[in-house]
Length: 388
Length: 188
Image 1 (cartoon, rainbow over the protein chains, first blue to last red):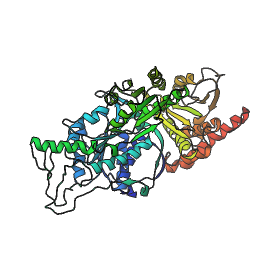
Image 2 (image 1 turned 90 degrees about the horizontal axis):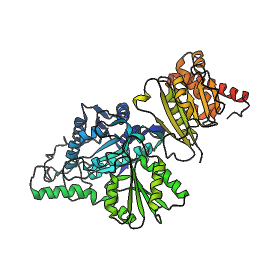
Image 3 (image 1 turned 120 degrees about the horizontal axis):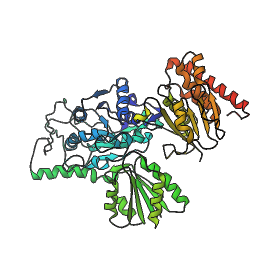
């Protein structure tokens, strides 16, 4: 990925005491996002507020739309007009965005969507935390498609991962979803924003060749292809229909295979480059706790206590949730007695862990519904049980 | 690893959340500590009772919520009634002198009373109550340095009221130091 230093105009360098929601907005501005169309919803509203407040001084545009459907639609438009774009929401709003999320996947439109998860289903628990939209992020839109999703565990990571989200989104031309939660979104901690010249961003890559050679698409299962900017004088077409490299409808089974294979493989085929994991003491472990987001912090507390009891326990924190770290789970499952998967939902990512563990080790789900983080003691109990 | 859990509480409009923000910023940015601040966001947090929580540690805070608060600042009767029983033996209970009627003398706790509202009114506005209380808190708990607290104020209080807020802080701080020496406790 070709990167350049961030535009200092968007970078509020220095140490801050900031909540995760605000850090998302600062990350977006630092990454070069200059367009944000959104609709407020707890617990994500503070991100929109921060972006709106900072937009005039940075030269960005903030629009409060009439709803979430319009928000993501405006973002798709602005992305093709040359802007880096972002929106934030939570479950109920994300559900409304899902249709056009599919359009963004199909049209290979770069954008970042943060889902500050709250308890569901439906309007659920507006002010309380959850991790219940993990599968929705991956499987929300109809048809085969693939996105990237990242999962921060702190306000600092909300900042850092938003920049990474933009970079991945620009390079792979795919919507990148930040799956955070109410706890991280509303929690204040120290956030250090580096100087602009230390922040690496992937700039928008706009086509600048001849009109004859202009192609908004290239179906080769790779990233790095230029966008074509509306208004630059090129004739091209964008549609949700199965299309050819010029973007015009080409509705055959053969073309669908070409397009869908590209959409899936540009992400899955590059999973090794995309996936980031945070591992601790997995070599020689009897038990590995696989966790993500706020739950991983609670898990570390349980892991520390378990180690004091002499249990050999490792930690795997998934910073990248999608694509899923299939290969690593397969490797680990061949070496440990059990994998413990705590999450604030009825059991979602544990299904991926089970699928990839393939029966080679026990997989213990430590789940509960939305509203609260785990009691570390509950995770500790599961680690003890894993040893039996 | 030493971890301190603090609850700031009072009624809406007293600047309770601000107290936690200032203290958290002071600790995390200027006192080289790890600090995680959370607040209740539900309907129960609006109107009468208002609370913000701070977990302070020498190492990274893993669990962001309170498990065993050892310091409670209660600036209203309701806040005091709701939270004082959480404190363990030896815990620090800071109450607003005139707004909180004590249910006992709390012999098991380090009880500290501060006339924050009166001092704030003397400075010209009841709105400075939280800063007087914070100054007092800083002096009697020793959790955070006065220097760091003052450094944390810009950006968290309006610029034009910065000086008077520092004055309010100092007023509470001096009162706290005085009380400590009267009680024969070493000032922090």
